Length: 247
Image (tube, rainbow, N blue to C red; front, side, top):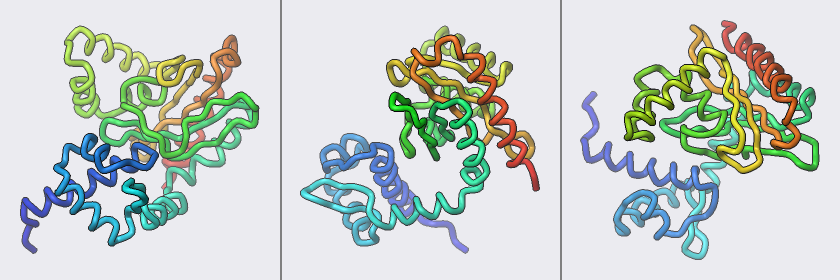
């Protein structure tokens, strides 16, 4: 079997880049916005969009683009078949009921943290990291917990990308090593103002980190309850990890 032509591989990467941008932005985008996010020439972008529309991965309306029905089918298939989501969901629900706060399941993809699943608090004032939302793998409890438990080489690559200054990079590394030692990350207002969060790692077979369980609450409601909420989250994460480690 012959290897694909380099040009074919590059074209495939560009197609996936367009899909990734549409997925990460979480809203319809104009061609101009897509060009800005991808760096593609207009002619190249339109050619890729035409192919994606033909296959049903992208929809166009009034010159703007959004994920199409085939993308939604992929999402549905992910929800039904994801081992991590299936294992985590019961304990996420239990933790949300115990704490009366919102609970998210977050994973690292390249240099971003992406929310795979969410159980919202039933309280009228609640914090939520919407399912499908992504943020840079830098700030916030989820991102720091995930980054702290990446393999050293992958972690260092992200740190070099986000912190060109060696002193800042050293400070960030020290914080991540402390998070790995304590077993959880806790932040307030780093991603969304007024939102407190605590995140504990999830481990699969061979103690490989596969994601993070994050509890989110308004800062005002979490005040004075930080330790109790952190303990709840750590216990729930340990239960999920035990399930993930079973053959």
